[in-house]
Amino acid sequence: MMMITKALKCAVVCTVILFFSCDGEQQQTDKAKNDDKLPVTAIAIPVNDGWGYEIYVDNQPFIKQETIPAAEGFQTFKSREDALRIAKLVMAKMKEGKKFPAVTMEELQQAKIAMNSATSGILKQ
Image (tube, rainbow, N blue to C red; front, top):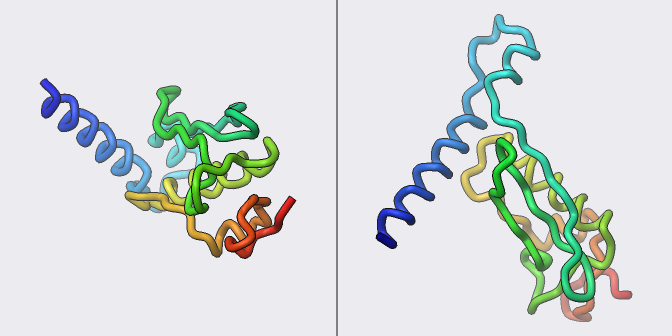
């Protein structure tokens, strides 16, 4: 049963990625192209002493991120805005067709995401 569940999840993820990576014909209008893609949305969620985010594909939960990706330890975002800024970055990567929309430390630095760790090279609060 567990193998079937993992296989089903993998199939769903592959299907979603396929939807994001297919552009259709160039002669179609932008609206027609967007109609072929599943809607992707993000919300900020309160967690422990901070914020995280969830990304939904076709109104179904796809990613639940309760900590800052790529950060040392289990750090939460300091603000709702920081969480949504990184969620939008991940959504953009998904729409570009990236199979694994990972966030790097460099991207966190560019987005000026506040973190606790003095060794992270990111703003401390």
